[in-house]
Amino acid sequence: MGFSWPTAHGSDASEWGGPVLSEALPSMLFAGPSRTPSISWSPGSVHAISIGLYPDAFKRVFGIEASDLMDLVLPMEQVLPASSCQALGQVGTEDGPLFQQLESAIQRCAHGGLATGGAATLNHWLTALGMKIAATCTGTGLRQMQRQFKRWAGQSQRELQLYVRAERAFALVQQQENPVWSDVALQAGYSDQSHFGREVKRISGFSPAQFAQRMKTDEAFWMYRLLGKS
Image (cartoon, rainbow, N blue to C red; front, side, top):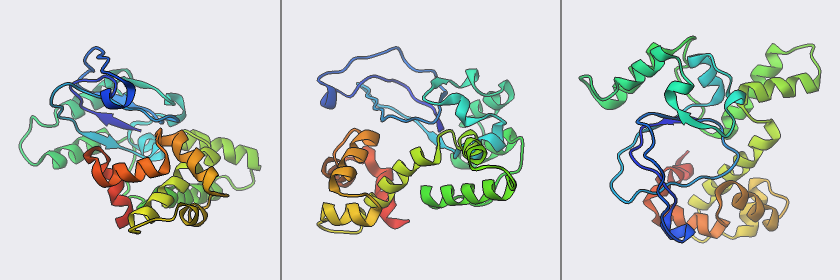
Protein backbone atom coordinates (compact mmCIF):
# COMPACT_ATOMS: atom_id res chain seq x y z
CA MET A 1 0.00 0.00 0.00
CA GLY A 2 1.19 3.53 -0.48
CA PHE A 3 0.65 7.22 -0.93
CA SER A 4 1.13 9.22 -4.13
CA TRP A 5 1.29 12.84 -5.15
CA PRO A 6 0.14 12.62 -8.85
CA THR A 7 -0.91 15.24 -11.41
CA ALA A 8 -2.97 13.32 -14.01
CA HIS A 9 -4.45 9.90 -14.59
CA GLY A 10 -5.95 7.77 -17.34
CA SER A 11 -5.37 4.49 -19.16
CA ASP A 12 -2.24 3.51 -21.05
CA ALA A 13 -2.64 4.33 -24.74
CA SER A 14 -0.08 1.83 -26.04
CA GLU A 15 -1.54 -1.15 -24.17
CA TRP A 16 -5.29 -0.55 -24.34
CA GLY A 17 -5.90 1.06 -27.72
CA GLY A 18 -6.13 4.74 -26.87
CA PRO A 19 -6.13 7.20 -23.98
CA VAL A 20 -9.25 7.62 -21.88
CA LEU A 21 -8.70 10.55 -19.58
CA SER A 22 -10.43 10.79 -16.24
CA GLU A 23 -10.65 13.75 -13.94
CA ALA A 24 -7.37 14.85 -12.41
CA LEU A 25 -6.54 12.95 -9.26
CA PRO A 26 -6.26 14.77 -5.93
CA SER A 27 -2.86 16.10 -4.98
CA MET A 28 -2.46 13.38 -2.31
CA LEU A 29 -3.79 9.89 -2.97
CA PHE A 30 -3.97 6.68 -0.93
CA ALA A 31 -3.88 3.18 -2.44
CA GLY A 32 -4.60 0.17 -0.25
CA PRO A 33 -3.36 -3.41 -0.76
CA SER A 34 -4.25 -4.49 -4.30
CA ARG A 35 -4.91 -7.94 -5.75
CA THR A 36 -4.89 -6.83 -9.41
CA PRO A 37 -2.41 -4.93 -11.59
CA SER A 38 -3.12 -1.32 -12.49
CA ILE A 39 -1.77 1.15 -15.01
CA SER A 40 -1.95 4.92 -15.45
CA TRP A 41 -1.20 7.28 -18.30
CA SER A 42 -0.89 11.03 -18.75
CA PRO A 43 -0.70 13.12 -21.96
CA GLY A 44 1.85 15.46 -20.38
CA SER A 45 4.60 15.53 -17.83
CA VAL A 46 3.93 13.96 -14.45
CA HIS A 47 5.80 14.71 -11.26
CA ALA A 48 4.93 12.32 -8.46
CA ILE A 49 6.33 10.75 -5.32
CA SER A 50 5.09 7.40 -4.03
CA ILE A 51 5.69 5.98 -0.57
CA GLY A 52 5.13 2.27 -0.02
CA LEU A 53 4.57 0.87 3.47
CA TYR A 54 4.18 -2.72 4.59
CA PRO A 55 0.69 -3.14 6.11
CA ASP A 56 1.95 -3.80 9.65
CA ALA A 57 4.11 -0.66 9.46
CA PHE A 58 1.05 1.24 8.23
CA LYS A 59 -0.83 0.06 11.32
CA ARG A 60 1.99 1.18 13.62
CA VAL A 61 2.22 4.61 12.00
CA PHE A 62 -1.44 5.47 11.47
CA GLY A 63 -3.35 2.98 13.66
CA ILE A 64 -5.38 1.69 10.67
CA GLU A 65 -5.89 -1.94 9.63
CA ALA A 66 -4.78 -2.73 6.08
CA SER A 67 -7.54 -5.32 5.64
CA ASP A 68 -10.15 -2.52 5.79
CA LEU A 69 -8.66 -0.86 2.69
CA MET A 70 -8.29 -3.76 0.26
CA ASP A 71 -8.34 -2.67 -3.43
CA LEU A 72 -9.30 0.91 -2.54
CA VAL A 73 -7.85 4.07 -4.09
CA LEU A 74 -9.06 7.16 -2.25
CA PRO A 75 -8.17 10.78 -1.56
CA MET A 76 -5.79 10.69 1.38
CA GLU A 77 -8.04 12.81 3.59
CA GLN A 78 -10.69 10.05 3.43
CA VAL A 79 -8.27 7.56 4.99
CA LEU A 80 -5.77 9.30 7.25
CA PRO A 81 -6.38 11.56 10.24
CA ALA A 82 -6.44 15.29 9.51
CA SER A 83 -3.20 15.79 11.48
CA SER A 84 -1.40 13.21 9.30
CA CYS A 85 -2.70 14.76 6.08
CA GLN A 86 -1.51 18.15 7.27
CA ALA A 87 1.97 16.81 8.11
CA LEU A 88 2.31 15.03 4.76
CA GLY A 89 0.87 17.99 2.88
CA GLN A 90 3.70 20.19 4.10
CA VAL A 91 6.32 18.02 2.39
CA GLY A 92 8.08 20.07 -0.28
CA THR A 93 7.25 23.40 1.33
CA GLU A 94 9.92 23.34 4.02
CA ASP A 95 13.69 23.74 3.95
CA GLY A 96 15.91 20.71 3.51
CA PRO A 97 16.15 17.68 1.18
CA LEU A 98 12.79 16.31 0.10
CA PHE A 99 13.27 12.80 1.44
CA GLN A 100 14.34 14.10 4.82
CA GLN A 101 11.10 16.09 4.89
CA LEU A 102 9.18 12.90 4.09
CA GLU A 103 10.89 10.95 6.86
CA SER A 104 10.22 13.75 9.32
CA ALA A 105 6.55 13.93 8.31
CA ILE A 106 6.06 10.18 8.77
CA GLN A 107 7.74 10.34 12.17
CA ARG A 108 5.28 13.05 13.19
CA CYS A 109 2.37 10.85 12.05
CA ALA A 110 3.50 7.75 13.93
CA HIS A 111 1.18 6.38 16.63
CA GLY A 112 3.76 3.80 17.65
CA GLY A 113 7.49 3.23 17.36
CA LEU A 114 9.04 2.92 13.92
CA ALA A 115 11.52 0.21 13.04
CA THR A 116 15.03 1.40 12.23
CA GLY A 117 15.43 -1.01 9.32
CA GLY A 118 13.14 -2.61 6.79
CA ALA A 119 12.84 -6.04 5.21
CA ALA A 120 15.05 -6.42 2.14
CA THR A 121 12.48 -8.47 0.24
CA LEU A 122 8.83 -9.43 0.49
CA ASN A 123 9.88 -12.94 1.51
CA HIS A 124 11.93 -11.55 4.42
CA TRP A 125 8.96 -9.46 5.53
CA LEU A 126 6.49 -12.39 5.37
CA THR A 127 8.87 -14.62 7.30
CA ALA A 128 9.35 -12.00 10.02
CA LEU A 129 5.61 -11.32 10.22
CA GLY A 130 4.82 -15.03 10.51
CA MET A 131 7.36 -15.41 13.33
CA LYS A 132 5.90 -12.39 15.15
CA ILE A 133 2.37 -13.79 14.92
CA ALA A 134 3.54 -17.20 16.14
CA ALA A 135 5.25 -15.57 19.12
CA THR A 136 2.28 -13.36 20.07
CA CYS A 137 -0.51 -15.87 19.42
CA THR A 138 0.77 -18.80 21.46
CA GLY A 139 -1.95 -21.19 22.53
CA THR A 140 -4.30 -20.23 19.69
CA GLY A 141 -5.44 -22.41 16.82
CA LEU A 142 -4.19 -22.33 13.24
CA ARG A 143 -7.34 -20.63 11.91
CA GLN A 144 -7.06 -17.86 14.48
CA MET A 145 -3.44 -17.28 13.50
CA GLN A 146 -4.42 -17.17 9.85
CA ARG A 147 -7.09 -14.55 10.59
CA GLN A 148 -4.59 -12.51 12.59
CA PHE A 149 -2.11 -12.69 9.71
CA LYS A 150 -4.75 -11.37 7.29
CA ARG A 151 -5.65 -8.51 9.65
CA TRP A 152 -2.02 -7.45 9.91
CA ALA A 153 -1.02 -8.03 6.30
CA GLY A 154 -4.23 -7.14 4.46
CA GLN A 155 -4.14 -10.43 2.53
CA SER A 156 -3.74 -14.06 3.46
CA GLN A 157 -0.31 -15.68 3.57
CA ARG A 158 -1.31 -17.87 0.62
CA GLU A 159 -2.27 -14.84 -1.48
CA LEU A 160 0.98 -13.05 -0.67
CA GLN A 161 3.04 -16.09 -1.67
CA LEU A 162 2.06 -15.24 -5.27
CA TYR A 163 4.18 -12.11 -5.00
CA VAL A 164 7.01 -13.83 -3.13
CA ARG A 165 7.43 -16.36 -5.95
CA ALA A 166 7.29 -13.65 -8.62
CA GLU A 167 9.81 -11.52 -6.73
CA ARG A 168 12.16 -14.49 -6.46
CA ALA A 169 11.70 -15.37 -10.14
CA PHE A 170 12.54 -11.92 -11.46
CA ALA A 171 15.49 -11.56 -9.13
CA LEU A 172 16.80 -14.70 -10.85
CA VAL A 173 16.01 -13.24 -14.27
CA GLN A 174 17.97 -10.09 -13.43
CA GLN A 175 21.00 -12.23 -12.62
CA GLN A 176 20.95 -14.21 -15.90
CA GLU A 177 21.85 -13.07 -19.40
CA ASN A 178 19.55 -15.53 -21.20
CA PRO A 179 17.14 -17.05 -18.68
CA VAL A 180 15.68 -20.47 -19.31
CA TRP A 181 12.08 -20.08 -18.17
CA SER A 182 11.58 -23.67 -17.08
CA ASP A 183 14.67 -23.42 -14.85
CA VAL A 184 13.56 -20.06 -13.44
CA ALA A 185 10.12 -21.50 -12.65
CA LEU A 186 11.63 -24.46 -10.79
CA GLN A 187 14.12 -22.37 -8.79
CA ALA A 188 11.46 -19.81 -7.82
CA GLY A 189 9.12 -22.46 -6.40
CA TYR A 190 6.54 -22.93 -9.18
CA SER A 191 5.26 -26.39 -10.02
CA ASP A 192 6.11 -25.92 -13.71
CA GLN A 193 6.57 -23.26 -16.41
CA SER A 194 2.82 -23.00 -17.08
CA HIS A 195 2.17 -22.31 -13.41
CA PHE A 196 4.84 -19.59 -13.55
CA GLY A 197 3.26 -17.98 -16.60
CA ARG A 198 -0.26 -17.97 -15.16
CA GLU A 199 0.74 -16.39 -11.86
CA VAL A 200 2.93 -13.69 -13.42
CA LYS A 201 0.13 -12.81 -15.85
CA ARG A 202 -2.35 -12.68 -12.98
CA ILE A 203 -0.39 -10.23 -10.83
CA SER A 204 1.27 -8.11 -13.51
CA GLY A 205 -0.84 -8.33 -16.66
CA PHE A 206 2.23 -9.46 -18.65
CA SER A 207 3.74 -12.79 -19.62
CA PRO A 208 7.13 -13.57 -18.00
CA ALA A 209 8.95 -12.76 -21.26
CA GLN A 210 7.10 -9.45 -21.67
CA PHE A 211 7.72 -8.52 -18.08
CA ALA A 212 11.42 -9.35 -18.33
CA GLN A 213 11.75 -7.25 -21.48
CA ARG A 214 10.01 -4.33 -19.80
CA MET A 215 12.41 -4.55 -16.89
CA LYS A 216 15.32 -4.16 -19.30
CA THR A 217 13.98 -1.42 -21.55
CA ASP A 218 11.07 0.43 -19.92
CA GLU A 219 12.00 3.24 -17.54
CA ALA A 220 8.66 2.78 -15.72
CA PHE A 221 9.96 -0.62 -14.54
CA TRP A 222 13.08 0.80 -12.89
CA MET A 223 12.06 -0.49 -9.45
CA TYR A 224 12.02 -4.11 -10.62
CA ARG A 225 15.60 -3.79 -11.83
CA LEU A 226 16.61 -3.50 -8.19
CA LEU A 227 15.45 -7.06 -7.50
CA GLY A 228 18.64 -8.57 -8.82
CA LYS A 229 20.66 -6.41 -6.45
CA SER A 230 18.84 -7.38 -3.24
